[in-house]
Image (cartoon, rainbow, N blue to C red):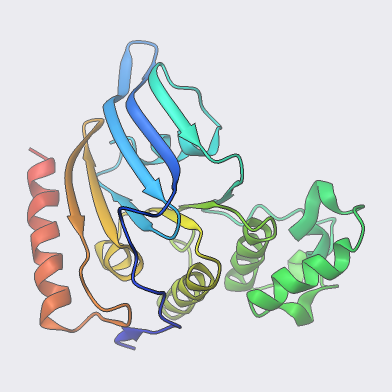
Amino acid sequence: MSEVAYKPQAEFDHDSAPVVARLSGVRKRYGDNTVLDNVDFTVRKGEAVALVGPSGTGKTTVLRLLAGLEAVSGGRTDVSENTSVVFQEPRLIQALRVWKNVLLDEVHKPNAKDRARVALHDVGLEDKLESWPVSLSGGQAQRVAVARALYRRPDLMLLDEPFSALDAFTRRSTQSLVLKLWAKYRFGLVIVTHDLDEALILADRIVILSKGRICHETRVDLPRERDVTSPEFNALKRDLLKQFSLSLT
């Protein structure tokens, strides 16, 4: 499969879309170890941004700050309260049926099951409403995690390498699913990944981190049905590989 196709989103206006997340001069330290140093980072509603870089450069720390799971050591964060996270692992509760895993603490709200059904329909798993997590494949479990993130109709969705444990075919189909949902609901999207192909498939903008700082940004000016075999795609990939290599020095 060479293309990732989905319903195209209207052309993104980088200037007029509202900001859903902003880090301003952010520093993060753990004891004497500085993980992030003077990071400025903005995400607008309807924008997809990929964070890439070598291990230990602060990508997941940025995501955790955006999610409100960590506090900054310095600087400022302004992030929409309506933010959802999809982690590397689905983190499903085995003792709860699939629909209750979508809702968690909102399971007793009016029309809760119907709302879970809508979210599961969006990810193609409405037929798994009453299933137990143990009966799901890895790809299905991760789609339930996406439904859980989607349920609250977030302004911002954060993805922490959620496709890394999937096989190549399932990874590609799940990427396509996320893009369809992003085009439909127009949330801001931040993806942490080590995979440059994945970054180029998913993102409008790619940010490379190195040694706790943003060292390079690239806009991905490609049609939204991206052909990973095209000369344009691979020219951008070569440039990113060069910048990635420079970030290691």
